[in-house]
Length: 264
Image 1 (cartoon, helix red, strand yellow):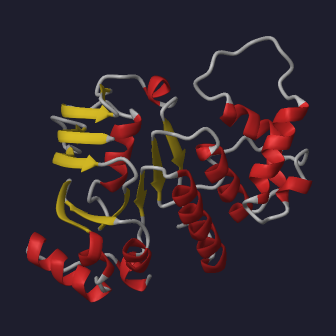
Image 2 (image 1 turned 90 degrees about the vertical axis):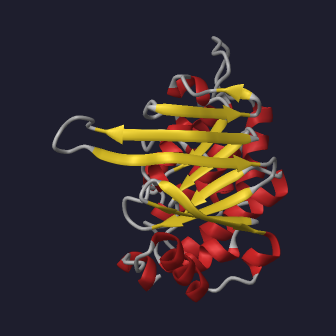
Image 3 (image 1 turned 135 degrees about the horizontal axis):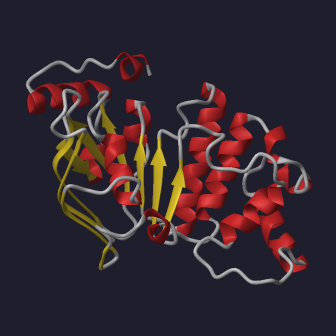
């Protein structure tokens, strides 16, 4: 489904602020893989997702999505095939629009626009059924402005919008990090349910090692712009947080020093 081949990215090249964000990343995802990604600050996790999404151009290497070389595609062209949920719950929705209007926009992502009425009865029924899956009562508030929702409700809605039209790849960039623990657990459970039921291929960045071990069928650890550990199957299921810390020290030659992850 996805091949990242020797991808490199340097920001502010040739200046005092030069930063090598990716130093030759290689990663292959099979159809249906759910990969969790962990690593310290500046490891290149979010940069890797932004390279896939086309937010920044890559310096070198290739990105192939479902057989198509998208390495030089513009961000808007890739958006048709990708679903994204960001860390900030405010980022994935339009606050001044109604819940059903947000869903309608998401449903039309990558499709040609027409002069027909925006929403019809069939669509409203479809959205109502989709909202019921969230178990937040939003199916009874479809005409409410999204700006009136809590952070957790908005993030759950963003997740639904990102997967309303089955994307070829779902990108989750620490999408529970800004939520309180109880709400984060709810959104994470919803994430697993939606990915499993729709048989999606997904990459999820997380700062929580326990979540990284529990979720998905594969775990990837990054350090200084490269992948230093890749584990899947039964070996991943047997992992403990202490094992990950040991693997990090073995692969990187230094102690893991990320307070946010350690406290999680």
